[in-house]
Length: 87
Image (tube, rainbow, N blue to C red; front, top):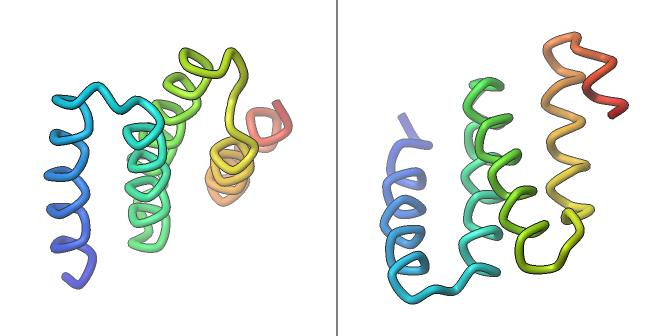
């Protein structure tokens, strides 16, 4: 699949950012992973990655990323979980 290579590269980047303690890039990479899973049609993994991005952003900025929350809401909406999409 065309998304497999992207996910592999993101996983590699994620490990490097974690090793270097670059939490902002860790969070951004989780967003990219979530977007890739979303495009591939895997909403569950998309939600997991975007939720993790939100947690990392909250840790470093004490607030979630608007981009991560927006994408997460879209992923919940896609599977009909409207209440969680609104939260």
